[in-house]
Length: 148
Length: 152
Image (cartoon, rainbow over all chains, first blue to last red; front, side, top):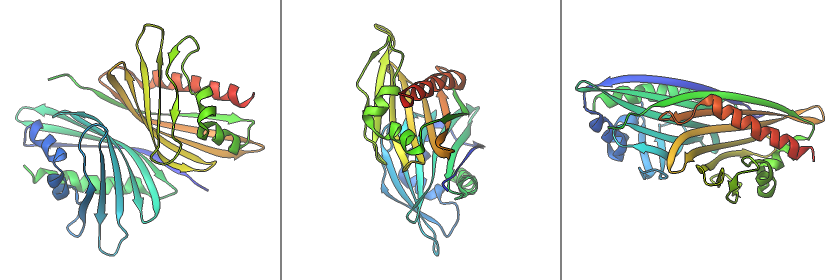
């Protein structure tokens, strides 16, 4: 029987950088490759990267001993230095394991920037992707601090 | 700098239909069928409804009161399990203004001789133009129209 588990995860960080610098770290695919890998033994490779409204990314999360997680993203709403909203689905091996709507909002706080990340996730067939998003994005947002 | 806001919400609509799951699924999968119930109010001017029902396929329709604001729906299909599941993301515009992005999952389950439909919409409402309550009322109206279509 096919099932879907819906979940919403919210994460918040404050970075010692301007909104423009935080936004640039998302917009630039080379920067994103550095900070979005959630562990030292995991690397991210992009087969497609097109950061604009309607543009698509196709990336691969590669971990030795595990099948790749392949993420397909469509960017829906991009407001420079303020907001990025995108939809992504993830396949693990041959199986589609989740679809998610993700929004990232930036607000200036003095010389710093508050980042709010909201992930609205539909995890398919007991794939447990809520935990996957929790782990992956916690680590990625911590890594992002090192960019500044 | 424009003042941005993003409000997130989830709503769930459950319906029971006398029609079998395959018939309910077909009402979503067949473009000519979906065009009959997935439409705005009768008095609205409307565009054609376009649907390319496959994973990665697009759906679009727009309409509005004569001379008034045009409501545009643009969707993308992310997952299909025949007779069981459809996952679509969509954005809404009022004229040129993007007002929301949503992820909608439709689950169809056997229910005696009929079907149970569970629609879950996870939405991000942008810059204060719409909210989840308004969207849920609109979506309820669409599922009323689906019920009428299935009972014909």
